[in-house]
Structures are given as structure tokens and as C-alpha cells.
Image (cartoon, rainbow, N blue to C red; front, side, top):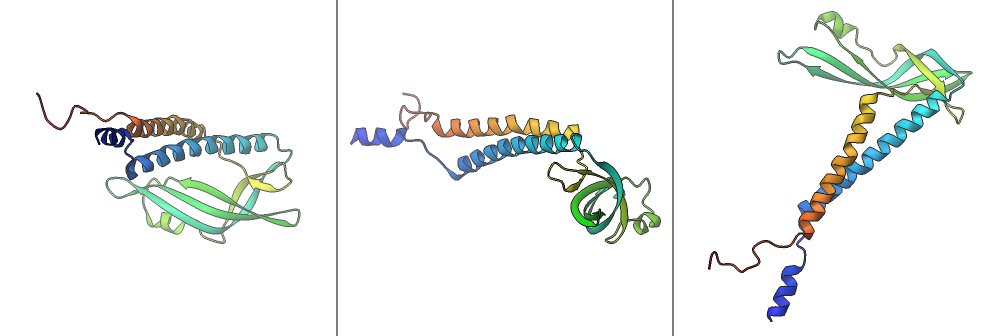
Length: 178
């Protein structure tokens, strides 16, 4: 009977937080790899383009997010839009994100916000497959964040696996000092 108890105590104990930690770590790792790959592909596609131009695009959909300081004044507004533009008689749609930094929160700022149907100037390029797309941001900070997420994901995953596989502490019994 003692042998059965020893076998049961050596079996690793897995709880839901260990599984969630492993999934989170793997998710960070995969997100970092995908971010690097997609940013490099879009950058190469843009750099190898034979047709880069600036055109006027129409805002089809728009969402805004305001960032405020401690005095509750708007310091930055991020606009996520879907824009459409016409090239050679064909209409294209793509996502475009831009920011506005109002110096003072005044009534004119509220009236000057972009809306659906407004026209904005965009740089577009012809991709390898012949379609036109909005130029990528190619922000080096984003690339560095993708690179930083990979080791964070690995560390979380390794730590969670270690917590599952590590030997039980206090294997001398249930008592204290003898």
C-alpha cells in the first residue's frame, strides 16, 4: 500500500492556472513571431513596389479613442478607419490608423474631427499581387515590441512547465522537526 501512495505523490499535479500560464506564454511567443513575420513581409512588399503614390481616400468607417491627462484634457486621439480609394477605375478598401495631438481641448477640435465620408490624403502602393494597399507604418518600436514578446512568452512557458514538473517539497512526511 505504501508503494501505491508513493506512485501517486510522484505524479505531477496540474491545475488550471498552470495550463492558462502555458497557453499565455505560448500565445505571447506565437504573437511575437507572427508580428515580426507580417511586419517584415509588408515592409518588403512596400519596398519592392513599382508604384507608390499619394491619393485622396474616403473614410468609410471610423472609430476614435481619446487619451487624457490627469486634468482630463484630451492629449491624443487615435483614429482607426476603413478607407476606400479608386485607382484606374477600381475601388479598393484598406485599414488606416492615424493620430491627432490637440494642443488645447477647444470647441474647434470637436468640430474638426474626421467623420465618415470625409476625404483624407493617404500614401498607397501596389503590392506584389497587383492590388493597391495603404502604406504600412513600419514603426521600429512595434518591431522591438514583437521581439520582446518572444522571450517573455518563453519565460512564462518554461516557468509554468517547471512548476508542474518540479518535485514536491516537504517529502519527509507531514510533521515538522523530528
